Image 1 (cartoon, helix red, strand yellow):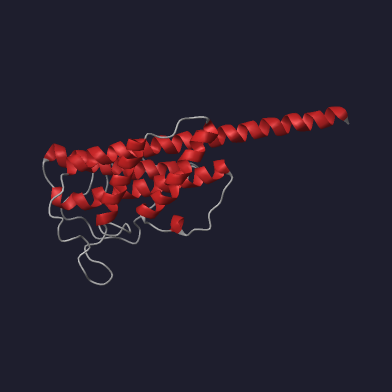
Image 2 (cartoon, rainbow, N blue to C red):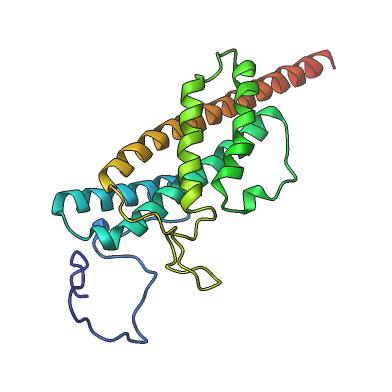
Length: 225
């Protein structure tokens, strides 16, 4: 494209050997910085924002619902998966634990939540905070269960058929209210991101406290030398 602010529409020119796919843009508005050092957070937020932009397009235009419902759900689901994995990782770091489970290398939201859920109460006790309200946790239980019923491995809204050649989606699922789906998943995304950020802040506070104590201990020995 000659103008980087335009999006190709209709019949485009054939690919050429000289075309550069991964390069900078003359127009900064069309250029994205990658490998910035905060990739985990950017990936998480990026999938969520992409889903929300597609939802806004569908609701504003009143079109493309049938085409965009699949990437919308896939993007939201992947955001939730990344957030749960982040919660688990930072929780283990804070609690000084580790896991030999292969759940973190898979895409099963039910198993990821089952791994993350029991870590919350110990963290609340460590931080001197009350446990999360039971109705909040039950709400997440319900959301995760509903997503898992229709997409247990992150592939069912990604591919139309399974590896065995069967339809990916359950036969009873015929319509999806994209607006309501997004409204509810945004609620869970906010809640899980809040947990993730809170635990991340606790990890940073713990590291700062340990560094301060180590510095004071080192100064004590140096003064006594």
